[in-house]
Image 1 (tube, rainbow, N blue to C red):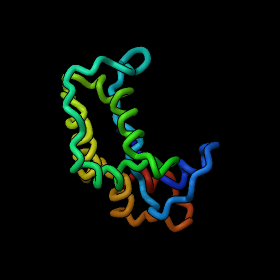
Image 2 (cartoon, one colour):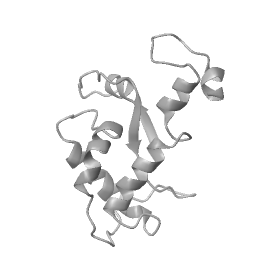
Image 3 (spheres, helix red, strand yellow):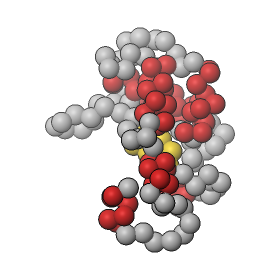
Image 4 (cartoon, rainbow, N blue to C red):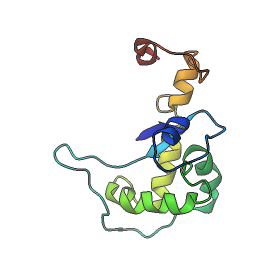
Length: 136
């Protein structure tokens, strides 16, 4: 489960994108990892249950397509097909994949923006010591 700081994602990518108004960490992705070798990609979809539309408002906030803010659903579908389906049997289907991402993001231990904010580390342009970030 990885997150990205939206302004940094825009600044480090050769594809131009608008500097996002929300200065926070959002989901970059959720994918299974192998202990040895590369991570699995494009696995067989075993359960065709689709993402529920009711999840989309939350996903637009926590997992925006930073580079193309007009195409969130296409981005999410690609993430599911490339990574999410490889989480079977832990991740049962597309809906379960996105529900899992939402649950992980809203927990205190997983939400990087909240963790830093609780430690009084805000996106205010000030430099921070690495130890302060690690201790957050």
